[in-house]
Each structure stands twice: as C-alpha cells, then as structure tokens.
Image 1 (cartoon, rainbow, N blue to C red):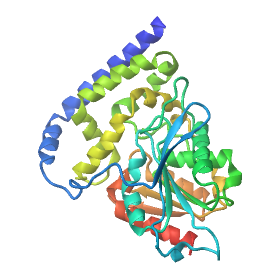
Image 2 (cartoon, rainbow, N blue to C red):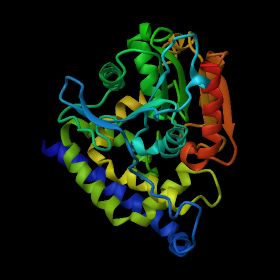
Image 3 (tube, rainbow, N blue to C red):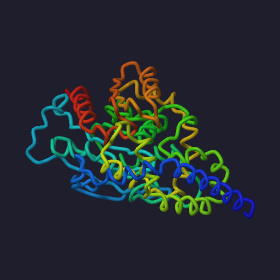
Image 4 (cartoon, rainbow, N blue to C red):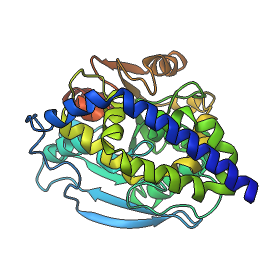
Length: 364
C-alpha cells in the first residue's frame, strides 16, 4: 500500500509539473479567453443543460449501478406518417448513449430538434459513473458492463417496437459492445444505428476525450487504478479545480474544430468534463485503451448505419470513422467541415439534418 501511495504521489507530481508547463505556455491565451467571455455569441442566452421530459426513472443494472433515464414522448396530435414504415408498424424509439466524461446533455440540440418535431419517442440516459447515474465502488468499468447497462435500459424503457440507437464517442463503442454481446437484437429490435465521432478499434494512440494532461500520462496511471485510485484522484481533482482556465482551453482545443467556437458551448462541455471525477476517469482508462470491436460490426451489417464525424476531430480522427465504413460498405459517412469531437454540439444543425435524412430512409 505504501508503494502504491508513493507511485500515486509520483504520478501526481508528474501531472502537476505537466500542468504547470502547459499553463505557462497558454498564459497569454488565457487572457484572450477572459476577454472573449465578454463578447456575446449565438448561444450565450441558450439554456444549455436540462430539458423538458415526460418521464424520469432509475434503471438498475443488477450489479449495483443505478442509471438515471429521461423519456420524451411524441407530442399529441402530431402526424407520424413520415416514420410510419410498413402498415401498422410501430414508430421507432430513439435511444441515445453519450460519450466519456460527458452526460446526456451532449445531445442537447438533437433533443431540442426532435422534441420540436414531436413525432418520435426518445430515451436518454447517463452512462455509469457519469451525470446523475451512480458509480462503481470497486474494480474498473468495462465495455461489456456498458453494453449490459444499455441492454437493461432497452428492456425497461422499450419493451417492444423498433429501436434506433444513437451513440457519441464512447456511446458508439457501447453500441458495438451491445452488438457483440447481444447480436440477436440487431435486425430484429434494433432497426438502425447512428455512430458519431467514434471508433471500432484500439485507441492507444488517441486521447479518447481525455484532457491533454491526463491523456499524456494515462499509461502511468493504469498500474495504480486498483491500488491507489483515491490518492491519484484527489491530486488530479485539486489540479483540475485550480486550473479552470486551462481546462477550458484544453476543452476548446481538443473538443472543437472551429477556430473560434462558441464560448457558451465550450463552457458547457467543460462543465460536463469537470463533473466527471478523476476516480471515474481512472476506472475507465484500461477498457477504453483496449477497445477492439471490429468483429462486432458484423451484427451491424443487417441494419442501416449512419456514421458522422467532424473533419478536425483530434480525439477520434476521421480515419477511424472511415475504417468503420470500410468494414460496413452500406453505411453512410457524413463528414462535417470545421468541426471537432463534439460535432453534435458544435454543428448541431448539420448533424440534425443528417439524422433527419437517415430517419426518413429507415422509415420512408
């Protein structure tokens, strides 16, 4: 235990030194950020975050994790003909799975758009250890566990009828893990999938949504996950709280592709990042760095698939989305110019247009 504590202390010291070096290099940029915060942007008056819902509930995974879920029902009196499908076929339910260090708020603009349309039922949930869902108390998170969590959400919220899965980043990996573990669902219950800014292969060379400091030192953190996570977490969490401007700059740099993205949107993403404890980050590291689900894509060959990626995504680069489409030749790839990893927020309108076209194709 003493050795683990010393190792954790060393890792914390290294991270602290890295933070100091990066902070020194962006001091001038911080000043620009502060001035930029005083300049209005298109979303400064947008109430980013919580949105109306018709029902909220808690779904238990059976292994001690409680998932927070929100459901939005179709509006009364709305013509459902665009998604009628075969005669007497039920309308699909869209189920959204968010990415690492984020929460269901990532789909803010898609939820807003589809709620205004009012013709589809939607299910949103916070992944284990994120948002308002509970955390594991020991061990690590696994993609198999995330697949089981999604399976439980589907069982409790969509007991019948077709499902369209929408996953961003780690949410896309969750969908692939679901396909690997429950392939019988695809083509039967799951009628389509939308994969946004994600990958089906090992991501050792990428940051998977981690801030630069944590991403750079992820490998040294792995050996102390089980033995000294709390020590490491407290060190890094204090550093994160003390470096809010730095965290904001890193979020802008690695999450967005536009030269001058909306300050409000960057702040929204950074708040989601900061609410994810470093203990949760540490417990996810191994499973994300060893993610390899190319064989699971076979189950997706039976359904329509839409792949969306920002042209300037530095976290899950466009080549990873192109590789998914190479293995799924019938999938559609939509590339969004001047956009980064959070393309669904940065260019919400373009993502919504692609989603609308896809839904019309799945249910003509």
